[in-house]
Each structure stands twice: as C-alpha cells, then as structure tokens.
Length: 174
Length: 453
Image 1 (cartoon, chains in turn purple, green):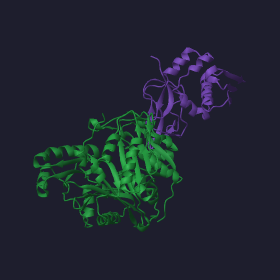
Image 2: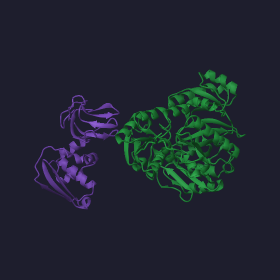
Image 3: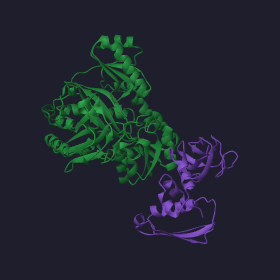
C-alpha cells in the first residue's frame, strides 16, 4: 500500500472525526487508529494487516471525494511517517486539471468508446484527457503542458461544476 | 389547465433576493439549488441552499448572465424550475424561452409577455390602446436630428430614454436644443453597452412628479388583483432609495383609478404571476403609465407587510398554474410600511460604490421590523455587483409610527468596516420634508446631507 492511499484514508478519517478505520482492497488490508488529541500529540497508530507493498495504487472509488478535498491542503504530517522529500516535491508540483464547463464528465471517447488516457501515461501538451458534456455540447479537457495524470478526481458520468478539479496532473521535469 | 408540480428550484441569482426566494421554497417544501460565481464563494446563498454549483467567474456575463451555464446547472442538479429573482436574467425573454426548451419551469411570465412589456415602445402602444394615459412621447427615433425635431413638438424639457432601458441607464434629461446631440450620443452608447440595443425615444418631462407603482398578482385563468400602490419617489439618479406604502400623496379616488388601470393592463396582456405597473403622477394627480416590470421587485417586501401576502410564494404557485387564492375584497390593507435600501456607498464621496470586508454587524429587531440581507460579519463585499447591502423594512400602525420605528431601527443597525448610506437614510427619514410627505422624484437633487462631525 502506498503512501498516497494512506494519506487519503488518514484525511478522510480526520474529516469524518472517526477513531478507527479499517480498509481493504485487492492489494491489501489495514487498520488505522487515531487518538483523540491527535493534533496535540501527533500520535497515530497504523496497524497493517497483510499489507503488501505496492509501488502504485489508486484510491478506491468511495474515497475520491475525500481526496479531492485534501488535494490542496498541506501534508505536513507526512514527515512523521518518514516520507521521502522527493515525494513531497512531487506533491507540490502537482496541480489540478479543471472542468471548463458545467456538465457530465467522461474519460471515454464517445466515438471510439476507448479511454482517452490511462494513469501515468506520458502526455504531450494539448492531449485530451476526457470530456465534459454540457447541454449536448462536448468540451474537451486538455493538458496545458507535458506530464502525466496521477489521479482522476471525478468518476465516470458524474456531474461537474465550473472549474471543478477533474484530475491531478504532474508536469514533466525539464 | 393542469397545474405543474415542482420539487427542486434553482435560483439564478445572488445576494438577498436569492435568500428571499429560498425562504419561500423551504416553506413550500421545495429543495433549492444555488448557483454562484467565483466572487461569491463565501456567500450566504451558497451556504443556505441544499446544494450549490459554481457557474463561472465574478464578471456577471460569465456567470449570472450566462444562460447556457445556468441551464446546464439545472440539468446536472435535476432542478425542475428556475427562479430568476430581479435584475440579471429576470426580464430576458430568451432566458424564459431557453428554460421552456429545456423543460424547466421558468418562474416568471412567458417569453412572449416579457418581450411585449420589455420593449418600452411596444408596451406604450399596448397601454394606449386601453385608453390609459402615457407620457406624451415618440416612437423609436431614427437619429439625433429626429430627436431635435420631435422635442420641439413636445416642448422642453424632455426625457431621452432607451427602448430597452431600465434602472436609470440609457436615460437623460434634456433641457434645451443645445444639449440634445451630446445627450443622445451618451445615452445611446450607454444603452448599447448595457442592453445591446441603442434605440432611443423621447418623453415629455414632468416636473415634481411622483413615482407610484401598483403591485398586481394574476393567474392563468384571467383573475387579477392588486396589492395596493407603492410610492418610490425618493430616488437618486433614478435608483430608488426609500419606498413606502400606501402613498400619502394620492387621493383615494386616484388610488382606485390607478389600481384599476394596472389590473386592466395585466388582464389585457394575459399576464400571470406578480407584476408591477409603474406610473408617473403629476402635481394635479394625473397619472401616466411608464412601464411594467414582469418580475419580482426589490421593494415587493413593503406590499408583503402591508397585506400579509408572501408574494414570492404566490409567484411560484401562479407560475405553476394554480388559481389565484385571493379575491380583491379579501385582501386586507393594514398600517403603513417603509423600506430603506442600505447601500455600500460613500455618501460624502458622491455615493461612490465601495467594496471590502464587513466588520461588526448587528441588525435591528423588535415589533414590525424586517431585515432582508445577505451580509454577515466578516463577509467580503465583492466589487463585481450591485452595491445594495440590506433592506430595512418597518411596519407601523400609521405613518408616524412607521417613521419613528424606521428612525430607531436605523440607529440600532450596525454595519462597520465599509461606508454605507445608513446616516443618509436617517437624515432623510427625519427631515421635515419627508415627515410632511413633501417630496417628488427630483427631491434628492436638493437634499443636503450633513456629514457627521
């Protein structure tokens, strides 16, 4: 299980004021217990159960809204978990690709029925990553520089508002 | 005709009117959807709605005036009705038509009615056919030269007006022939910018006139009632600052006639919902039709307190196709009502609109006091919109009590952080002229505001 998934679960737990979280997906299972005075003591107990190391993992669908909310917040707690500096830098460089219009989002090309892009594909500037359909008009969501999508923040066919973050984008280093 | 049932209302507006509409919706058991611009992220209307959708940038043309974004917002939120409030898209026939096309109930009259009354020249023709007096004037003028010829016939001073005008924009008082050319250029340019229509016409200028308007309610079955008149003569550059009902000025006989005229117009055009018919009344109490507003108005509140009828709720009911619930003789008029429009304006600096953060904020309370506002302590007033901060409405058993109540309520009101018109209103309400009811639409031109020492 990667650090990003942990962070997502941690934030979701904090936001919903729960003390304990159990999480399971096909790659592993874990339980996280949070002490009440967390901000004061900084105490966090994470007990992994059959945790298998994974290099990459996207969060389960139920957690996407929580990850949207956390996207812009600082991640200072990551230091407590001994996270490497390079990951933090990557976190800083990521930004959101936003919806240009109000409508329904799709990652699939309506003609070919194929996904426009996959996570971590190397993308050129101007690549279409998805569409927003507003009053039967199709608006393409494009990248404005070279890089890759590290996370989609909106599920297939879900409504989006103006400038709603649709995906986390990591620009390519020069 | 079967009445439509609706469940979810999208409110295509901001500020106090968006809150006002939501209150009516909640009392009727309707869900609400707010739309907001990026400048309104911290607004109360966003917070008070069941859900909210960002529709664009702070510039109104990108958000609150953007028809396709608002329709799209209704689509993704599955709203089945749209309330336009006042201003913005409330009197746009194309918006009403777009709603209909998308199977969304527009809370207002049909696009046909909006078009008919929205075009000031067409509206005058409709009213003249009913033998109701309009201010002597012209049709659309072909050029500024034509304006000079027409003005000679009517006699100076004349009012130059934009066909698509409203809110005092595209309007100029012309006192003599020398001033006509430049006034025409300026007013026409202003109208083209504001309403994308630079067509102008002329009207005779009536001095010391009163602005008296009649609130009507009509259903789709041909029933129409009035909720009395409102005296909105206290204006600054054609912007109303203080309204009252009933008018102290008009005689009972004139009141009867003017209300009957408003109903006649409503019935003639098969109007439905709440509408306002505006008249100018001269010193001899002759009244002339000016225009009809096919929407809820800022000052609808004073008629509500005067009659006890919730006009926004009635509006929703009537637009859904329900029959009018009130017969004229069952409507009870009681007491006297005043409204002050408190604006974020620097009175000492020529009423310059201001923006900024509201500091301490306290609203007046007690019997007969109503405050409709969207501001709160810590709220950042964005520079993008209308400068109105709050409407202070008071009811009294009679005019004297209402004035005294307004005076003490204004003193109770605290809005810190940005300049407001509070002290101006206080001086106005306490002035001898206002007390005596001795004012007209140009009264404020000579009213001297005393700056506090």
